[in-house]
Length: 254
Ligand code: SF4
Image (cartoon, rainbow, N blue to C red):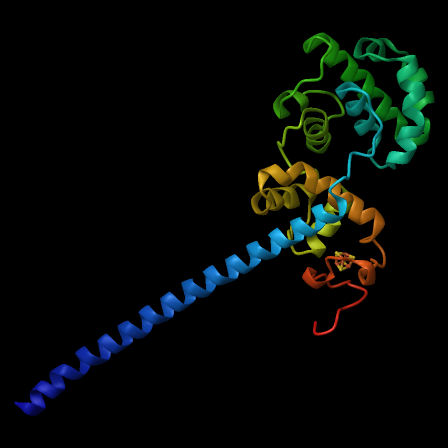
């Protein structure tokens, strides 16, 4: 009897032991996943805090006096610096101040005025078309939704996000320009290999109320410190939180 009981009890005990071990493993695994998530969320919060602390005053660098002027300036800023755009827009808006006037402008005159911003044939068509659509379909006022803005010639998602965020304070997306694309990946906030993928990742990890400010702050960081070639990591206040492979310095202990 003793032997039989022992024999019957063995598998039961082993199963119980294995079950407990498995349960322990599962609990341990989910516990560590939770801990990793918390740690990563804390890291993102700290990055956002430090960016805001340093660049919280950052504003859109494109000069404008209205949503319309911002829309035109943003279209012109594709593949061009904001400084260059700011050099051409005063004459452009003096000659053609409204969407109606821009729509009626001779294309050659627009091309001449914006020539130095590059890609001026396409950009002239875009701003003339934007003037036409806004005057004919939106009563001369820049629309305030992403869906409507995307119907305006020259306004792709990034342009629309800039206008919605800066002119109307509406966070419909995260503006991913060349600086945001590079730095989001350097900081490990995103891994995507296209601006669209990076924007989707950033929208997941950054609280919505920070979407607008985050882009301005990162763009300033990208111009001042985290430049494309040889980032100035020794001067960077985010260095301890940065995992970039192309960092140019590593603080002690990392
Ligand atoms: S440590 Fe270097 S790579 Fe990382 S964010 Fe700062 S400047 Fe950029």
